[in-house]
Length: 351
Image 1 (cartoon, rainbow, N blue to C red):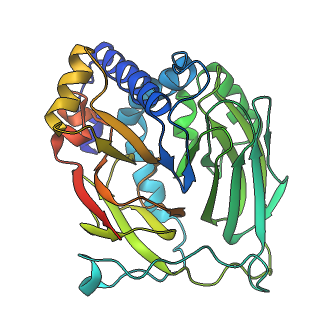
Image 2: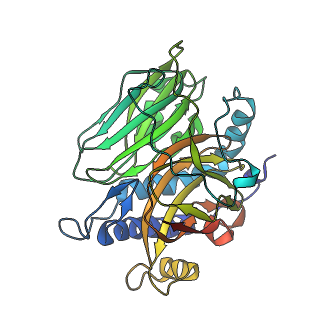
């Protein structure tokens, strides 16, 4: 039996910890302003303080409740899924540095078709069908609120009707019915270039910023249509227990990042900038005490991914010192956040 199924998780503690973490992480993000996914943000937004994020916190807390129950299923699925095509990534000799910045593929190129997904505060607009293979997707937030794009593929034995019913009852409870592929959060007016490797099947694009969380369904169909060419990946990130394997020094400028979960549990990646004089210990202490201003600002965020999955996004980080963190809890360590167990990485962005 997988070890994640052998541990009892104190869900009250998890709920309190992550309601706090999510609420204040996103409050800090909006209050301080960020440069996120290549989109510059002002120093403040109207009102200068967001309402708490009940939909997202409930979804995240539920996600942690589901972790211990679904890990064996998703690990098994990742082991039996068809192999995905290789992509261009830094080789072993470049893991401590990065290649020159690479811009997004030219959507006018014959082999590349750009798909558009848009968020408004009322709805998500997604093509009803998407051809299988590696697909370049531009995601835009045209609303006045933050929105998330979390791509989830339904298990082969799950119908959309079953997923819809499960999601309506409990968005986090439906996690056992899907594989999570990741995706960005976007501020109002934000835009992100992304690439996903789609297998045929039924999908849901989930937005957990709304209350209640929402999703839009789409279908990936077999297709002879050529996908995008191999990506010029400049920064390759591996997420596993309990570390990020990635370069320590990164060049500024728009470039492709690959996010790959090579572990056995769900993982995510947030890139944060510590306030002057603050440390990782200050983040943990602040989350426990909730006193004073948050000691960090969010800079970029890639949502939850299942074991064995990978996806890509263009990031443009300004020069500076940052931390890569996984805020998700580890049920084998009484729900302690992964970053407190070693899943943090100092990175420096240079000119």
